[in-house]
Length: 297
Image (tube, rainbow, N blue to C red; front, side, top):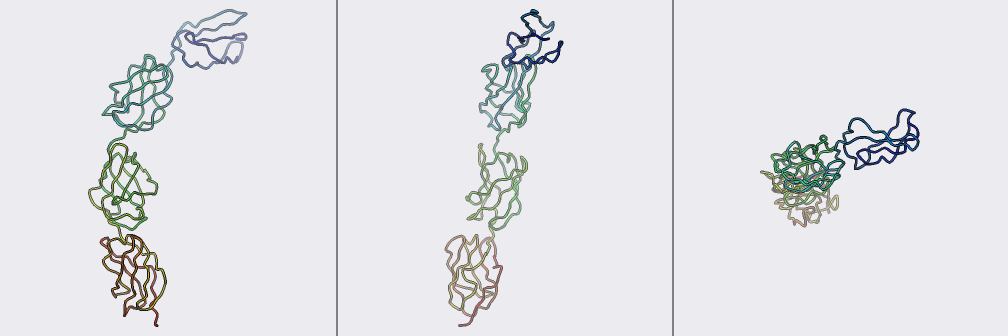
């Protein structure tokens, strides 16, 4: 087929015409092509036309990654001009507009399901390569563990969790990344400063709290000094000290002041001996990882 210098699909010309042999050429269906005869033209030979029509089927190029029910979304592609139906996860869109052969604007139906988007035209049905996630109000049905110190990795189970953008523990937002394991399971670490309370998850649709509290357990990381005598003032360092009700050096209670969620200032009591230090809060009892050494004068 040497000498062919033009190929058209329904009056739309192909932009490149590689000649494979005297009897074959290969062309890419051009943008905007319509169903119809394929015509070839050669200056020295003349024109020819296919007997049958070439069917230009629709193709979806892009869709949004996620959307709320009732939201308007844009679907781009090719050969979309005769669209007769748009479906979200198999659920028909009740309203859509064909903006042109390369774009459709559709309203996500209330009953839409997360999954592929399809567009049906007079020449076939196109299916998106990726899924569209339908964003619905999240719920938390359970979490584990039920208690722990700052840094504990908590697994939350519920519904519509794949679109969660924020998690808070007692109104303190988690700063670590939220790991999405599935639409029903996510994991997140307890943030510094968190207090005992509900776990609240938030996505673009709404926020929802857990039905029970997550209990923040105190944790001691160390002291400002490893040793001291009676009446020495020492800072106890750690997490979740808010609401502390008791501090003990061994078994002897000490006077103390909670300076912050991460620091308590205590006075080493008379009769205290070398041993562990403990802090009691509504969330539990924390014990120091090492002894505080009580030295003689």
